[in-house]
Length: 441
Image (tube, rainbow, N blue to C red; front, side, top):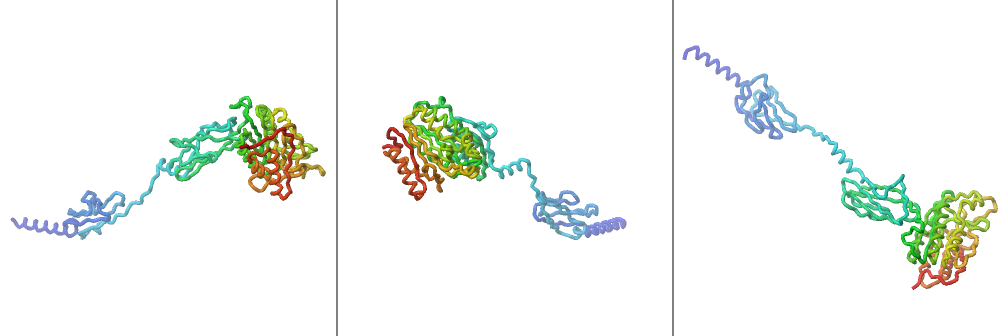
C-alpha cells in the first residue's frame, strides 16, 4: 500500500466517524408509540411498526425526521433536534375528534322515535268531518303507523282488533243524532295519537226497518241539556241514557235523541207516531226544560230563543203533539213521562206577570197515562246526583215485578216526597183501561 493510499483510507475513515457521531441510525434505534401499532416513516419511507428497532442510515439534513402514523390519530413527527444523539424515540399520538355525520335515514329514524303514531282511517269515508248513516252501529277500519309498533287502538273506549301491519277494525254502536267517534292509538313506547270525527245517525224510514214485524213495546226518549240560549242542565242526557238501558231490559224497542233542535224533535215525534201503529205499547219520555204558556205545555228544544211568551208557539214543541200522535196510532197503552218541570230559563226577560213555571195539567186520552215530575204549576229539581230526582226514583221502582204502572208511580211519588222533604210531589193523569205491568214474573 502506498503512502497516498494510506492517507486516503485514513481520511475516509475519519469522515465516516464524523458522520456517525452526528447522524441518527449508525446504530439500532428503539421506536415506541402510545398507543402502540403506529407505522413509522424514516425520511418519508416506511421503516417499521412500533414497537420496533430501526437501523438508521446516514443523516440527511433535508430529510431530518421520523414520522409516526396511525388511523384515527394525528401524525407525530420528531424534528432534527430530537433526532440527533437519540437512541430511542417515543411517539405520543393524539386521537382525532370524531364527528358523527347523520345520514338522512338516521334523521328520519330519529324523528320517528320521537313522534306519536300516524292514524289513517279507511272506513267510513268522511266528508268534511262528518258521516251520515242510518244503521245502529258502524265499522271503523284504519291503520296506525309507528316504527315502535302499535300496542293498542281504542275507539270510543272499545278495544279495536289489531291486524298485521298496524291495521285495526272495530264495530261501534251509534245513537240517533250526532255521535263523536274518538280514536286513540298507542305505540309500544306508550306514545299516543288521536283522531276525531262525527257520525250522524238518522232514523230509518219505518218502511225500511230491518225488522218490520210488530213489536209489543216502543219508546221514544228525548233528553236536552245543552241549551244555546237557556243555559245548561246537568242531568237530562244521563237520564235518557239510563232510561234507555232500563227500558230495553224491560222489552222495549228504544229510540233515543240527545240535545235536539226543534226540527229534530218534531220529526222524531211524527215518525214515532207512524211506527207506533205496529206496537201495542207506546212510551214517550222527555227530560229537559218544559214550560206552560196560557195553559199549554211546551217542550224546549236546545235552539229555542224565547224573548216573550208568544214565541213559545213558534220556537218550541207542544207537548200535546205527542198525545195526538199516540192517539192516532191506536196503540192499546200509551205512557207519557215528563221530567220537564224545571225553572223557565227565559222568564226573567218576559213582561211582568207572564209566568211559565212548571207544566199545566193535561187530560190523558183514553188508554193513556201522563206522569209529571211534580204537581201542576210547580217546578222540579234537576237533582244533585247522576240523574234528575224524578228519573232516579223511576229507575229505582220501574223494574219491580208484578206491580201495576199506577202502583209504580205511587212508589215514585212517596220516594220523591221523602227525598225532597215534601217540596216536590209527582203527579199523574190517567185513563188506562186495563192493568199494565212494566215487569212480571
